[in-house]
Image 1 (cartoon, helix red, strand yellow):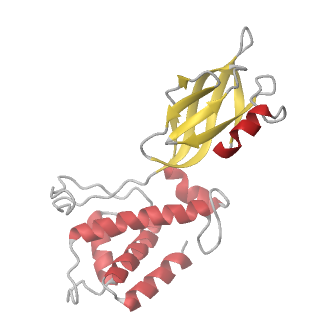
Image 2 (tube, helix red, strand yellow; image 1 turned 30 degrees about the vertical axis):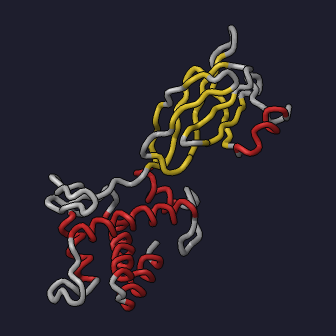
Image 3 (cartoon, rainbow, N blue to C red; image 1 turned 45 degrees about the vertical axis):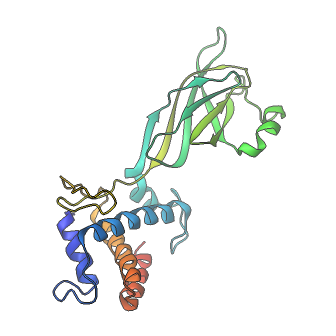
Length: 232
């Protein structure tokens, strides 16, 4: 869907297409509300805070709707003796999994099963014979801290290669010629929404709810909030 269509649909649902009554909605407000609505919609779907209480990959619809944001990124690892660390990608939003290929002595390289663990349980996990990293069993764990992923080896093996599969942040739309009030710089090119048109329609309703709340338009706020959730 083109940005021009998004703008028209938002103005229409705010009842401002012709009259522009109450407040005039500027282009940067449309962009800001739509981008905010995108993030809120994605977080609801991932966490299951939608009408059907379906979270990440819990139904065919969730798999289909969110697959565009599911990406793989190779990790640049630093050896810290009993664990390896890597900075998370800048567009990281939510964890999915880490794939690790390990080696030990003359043994063949093998793929490890990696569990996401709590940083608070680190010491217990490293001591527990049933849960500590083990090349023999092909299992280890990772934690997230300070925008980094830590993959633990407990000095039992070396990590040869690793990549992270994660949900990235949705791409923010931009409207050519629109001046960003935060920077005072005009956008030089259009950036279209990456989602399918049916999802964009739901996000538009969310964006209208945000704008309606800002200008205290209760009817539009209620209608579009209910419509967005009903169509999730």
